[in-house]
Length: 130
Image 1: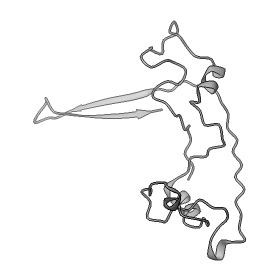
Image 2 (image 1 turned 90 degrees about the vertical axis):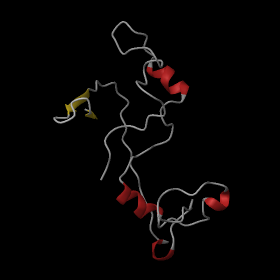
Image 3 (image 1 turned 30 degrees about the horizontal axis):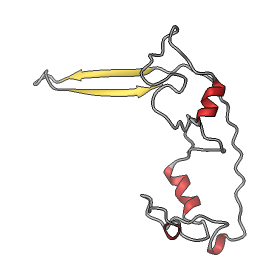
């Protein structure tokens, strides 16, 4: 499974300074300013599902990340940093083709509120980005 989206290294709208509303008259950064600010990753990045990521990570060879001073992650494996793979996978390699498009797009936040029948002052909110 592949995630469609981005790996934004910031909060909110990347083209707007924090606190500036995304309205047509508001200030907006240029794409070059965003690149210089380091908000987008500068190396190829491909978000992937847990089930795909763990298959790569559990087969990586080399020293453990913890032995290099990194903290242990949350997956039930020993994090290794490569190069190459372990055991039966030493002759394998991975070719990762990433085709990213940096483009501006409009997103919509859908917010719904369901009020309780027995306790109308209590409610649940559901939020989704589209």
